Length: 130
Image (cartoon, rainbow, N blue to C red):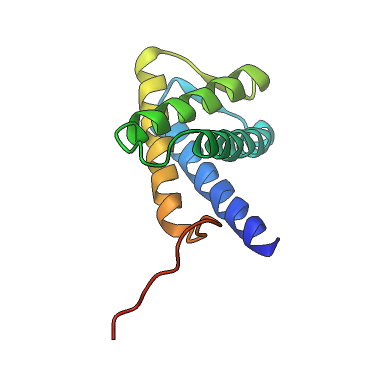
């Protein structure tokens, strides 16, 4: 259980940092502090849930769609968050802003994946040389 909490905590920190940076960079991405917390919690929950659903249903050998799939999942999680949180607290407007925010938040998710060292339950053990 503590590993799961650690993983979700790292994911939330990555999401918070990425959303804050995106709001600072993109003029058409507006966020207010109170709603920012709600947005981070909602976005993190959506991202983790969607990722788990996809990874458990898609053949693990389908690597060609990993980047595109990650971008689509990030976009969907951002879109649902944008719909769920009032525009006065979280609002992304404009095509280029959507593309930029999605790419930046997706990149943070990739970085999170490098930090989160939790191996899947069915992963074979690593054989060490020597």
